[in-house]
Image (tube, rainbow, N blue to C red; front, side, top):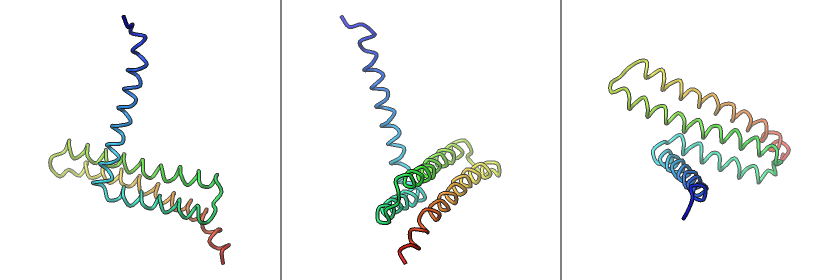
Length: 130
């Protein structure tokens, strides 16, 4: 006869696996329906291709990864906020607009910071080529 202790690791692993599946489904939905998420994802891919071409040091690539991951994560959070507001508010409401615009602004601010980091990392390497 199996005890609860014998089944517990399987249950925990099953829950963990499901949480990854749900997260991946959310990312796929964002890719399918959110233009800005697709744009930021493609730009992220290009950044890492250029980092390899320009032999960017690993520590600087780690900084780029943190910045790119932050932008993508904020895009996902922005999407969740926008969908929640749309679900709760059925007609135009200026307060809902402020919430949605502010969430989009957070993505914009972090995207600018990520772009600045990219310029600081890539520009000296590009200049060195000439």
